[in-house]
Length: 304
Image (cartoon, rainbow, N blue to C red; front, side, top):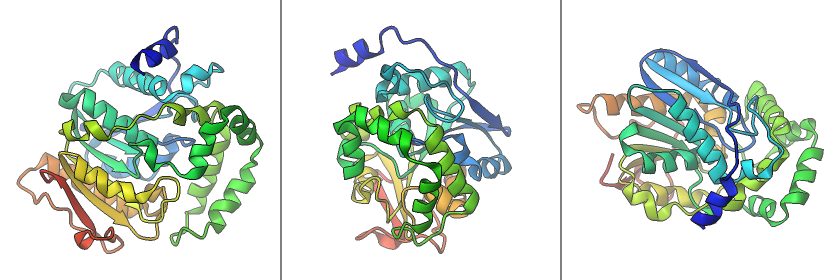
């Protein structure tokens, strides 16, 4: 498999990565999920700046305003990860950073933390992908015939995405109108080749125990994109993790309940900066537990 990936990436040139940065202080790198963009963080970025962090949010290759090569090799998971890693290197950070990753961005965050433990202060993982077993039937179908999936992707109108999110019965929390419109826009301007991203998702479960970065895992109990039953398993598999589920939320809690998620993330980072503070998160009223978990907070590994 490793040899196949190296052959896949051979000859690929670096591409232009669009990103924004703001604030001063400890660096925070924010990585969005599939068919999204850096606009996913439009609420979290100012919250991090107010809390005293220097944030960097990028558009992954094939997304937002970053380059969208035609060569499908750019869109396999490890190819995108390598472009991300190269971009982080080019930032020339002079100190370790926090990572915030949603969905596929959580997958990349876990991979980076495993490879470079000394460069990661901690992670906030929002509905993160870490094993292909999490994928919903629809996501698995993308991998069955990627050529067909690309054609279908091109033909889905933006208005239909808007209506679907507005009427989706799995969400009891309504998307803000601006967030819903941005999601639809990001979906349509993503390169259709990104459907191939799920083609080489590796199972990161065996390496979770080797990841030492303190981690906060936040997920929506109504996630229908990734199976939410796997999130408590992620918390248990990591060395130092806490987990909180949000009832009424689907796959994008940072957009559905942005104030709650912003508070959880900034408080978690503060606790890492000041070890004398309690390491158990104070749960906001909106949050809820996963089945079998105490008061909405799960603890994994050695505790957080």
